Image (cartoon, rainbow, N blue to C red; front, side, top):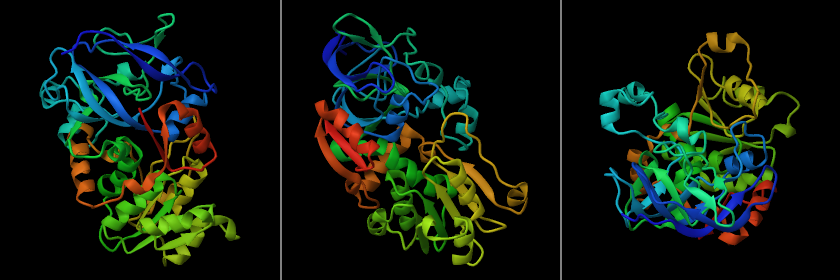
Length: 387
């Protein structure tokens, strides 16, 4: 156990809409129930950009963004039992409490956990949502230049050479897993796969429509392929994305702009009454409605994955639900993070789904603002940075 502060580089978001500043920060030692991790690789996700844009109502500045990463445990605080220095780990923004929490009812959502109904552990949410740590209500980061405290982000803050997490947010993975690849299992890829396998539970032979062909949409397609869906219809306004979607398993392609009627009507006609499952991977409330209404009457299930802007609301005619369609949502694909992410790593190494193919760019960490530019221009799926 190491009790000394570490000075290292971090990409700090000083304010909304400002470029990140790669500066020296001091990372305090892990306190009770905490783990300090040397980040080796981190990727960029739209959620990071959402907060940096200023549109995130929970956004705090200055902060260290980043939540899709992998690294090696450097030291642990008092009472930590599930990981040790040298372990290879994936930080998880969606924490998972311990069996003892469920037995003692100390996690706000542990009853649902015990029943297998949710992955939304609330044990550390009150702290991660405020950018602080549970042990003392303070962040572990300060600017080296003047000692200014820096908020944590999503309980992970992976845009730093070292970070500190609650033990509940650390998934230990096998040491032979390539960290520059499995870092993607910390968010987008897992979210798409889990939406298919855990939330919707797509069966062999089912028909599926996927709205939006970014990383999450492609992961949905790959998950549906692995589930042996018979038809996987990819929907996007950008036809240049169709060929990549085909490589992930899409069987048909639709550009809504090429039709003179609502896309839901087009899909209902294509599938003789509607698809069995649909997935919205954009965060557009109008598309969410279309995704529901393209589902088959009586049993169709539509899963919302995309995150809409603050204050936006979804709408449909009640008749759509009265007649048997189901509207669902998912976060982190329904995976219980600490226990299930290691199994996802095993499945990836067994060749059951794609990961490497999402990586379109690799950059040095000090080029992180270039990665944001690529993301904003839609020129990358995942950009992985080496620290």
